[in-house]
Image (cartoon, rainbow, N blue to C red; front, side, top):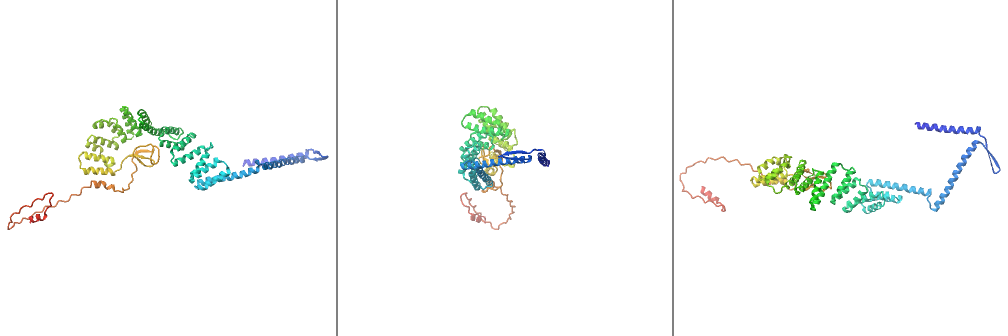
Length: 506
């Protein structure tokens, strides 16, 4: 509002100044005499000013006419002129409109329309850096991989679009299953932009699939330096990769390097159960039983696991059952009420043939958490105590249909794995396996295995009531018959003659 007022005041001041100047020229200015071609012209001051303005306008108009003539001559000669620039701008405007329509069609899922608009924009604009990208994306969305590949290869020729082209070709190779070429493309994309998060994830997954654990650890470090991972997550995942690297070295029978790599993996993440078990085995092979015990005890404190108990048993493979039971107190005293600890103690007592102790340790675990392993241990206890075979088969049948308890389960897709692995075989998730109970479904089995325990060990039928004894009436016969010979007792393999028994009784 204030600026508008200032502009109005300036306009009035300018008009007032012109008016005042014109009045001063009319009142005080002397006339100007001009002699040309033998003629004399006398002009007043105001007429001189107006004449000067007219002369300047004429010169400007003359220059425009001359430039127009030169433009026509250049147009005839084939040079760029305003006329050609007009047509170029019109073509450019249509090209950008087609490019925008193609982007909108691609976002709307109209892939064929987007592809046609992309070709039109490519023809009108002549800028492959823009149109090739739209052509590639539209062709890829429409399922024409050949055209998409050609467009991406053209984009490789420009520095600004080389990374985009490599990413496009990378996604195509991953979809086709060409892991070797995809890994090379991912490495090139990573070299161009090391901080690109998606490229880091793809390269890490491809390196893990190719079992290039050393390269995967370098990629993981770059991801951490770029801010894509926290230090805790980095330590855990680097321990997973170090563990896989140690397993590869172990397969090559390089025990020293394997021992160092396994211990390094365990130091990175002490709660990683496979790393703790491998590090303990490596130290046990080197004769360091105390170090192996310390590692397994620390991992057992984080989470009891059967693999830790197996590695602890391998420290002294030749010991007796009683000595092993005594040595295992280093683990069993940590979490005495944990189900894994109770089942471990039951196994040790069964091995020592102390079946009452095994039953006491197992306690009510078969009722509160009836897993297949606990029920199988109960069957072993029953057999060790001399129970009949029907009772043993009943416990085994229950173990067959009971849940298996904690397993290696993927946190992402809930897939169950028999052994730990860094990558889920089902969904491809990295470091998603955890030791826990998978979600159980309450659907009945199609084979009817829920009735198997009752079929193997059916409940005893209720006892029938005993009949009351009847008092026999004694009748004295008038005439006593001579005694009849007793019937012969039938042998086990001879049929019993019921008619003879009836005749003898009468």
